[in-house]
Image 1 (spheres, each protein chain N blue to C red):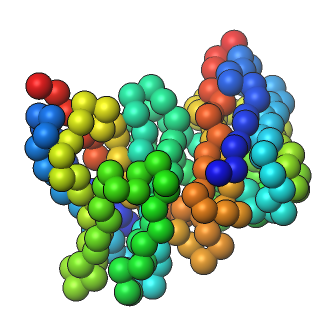
Image 2 (cartoon, rainbow over the protein chains, first blue to last red):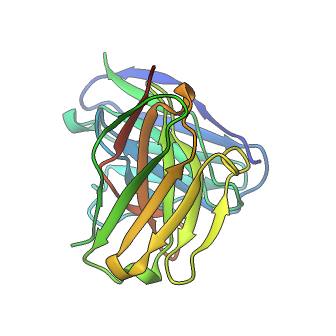
Length: 107
Length: 118
């Protein structure tokens, strides 16, 4: 199985901050990586697919980059509704695997 | 509007069987794979497997192979996840999700909480 490692596990930030989350894969994925946002008690929501493509309806402050084994999710200016947990997922091989999650908390 | 609606919360005893459902609407159900994802209390997301409603083809994670069974009834646009003998460690929220052609989960059900306790 491909192992996905996110860092940090949590980050404390303020509204307006730039937040960067990284995801490292145990083997190359090309650009087969997605990012999801999950709020408490809710289902995950697709933000980014193919490493850097923004899902329809997702604000442009979210962006993704990377290829191969190293990927990044960036929130350019954190908004109150962005406090949540973020997961990466590789869609390169079976079984699909998720990172362990990064919680973005209020500083 | 694409929607996936899951069945309600369940409380079961160890050893009991269970089948939960996920009903799709707003799109052609048979043409999109449906995935299942587990989230144990306070934990991350675990990919369980996927099923293709058109022909019931399945792909299971090795971690869940033999532990659960995925099935579909395309005539009613519904996918199922079932257990023959539940364990306390099956306590979790189970999400279904539609897989788009690019392999991403673009629509999700609201989740079904399964609690297994004696």
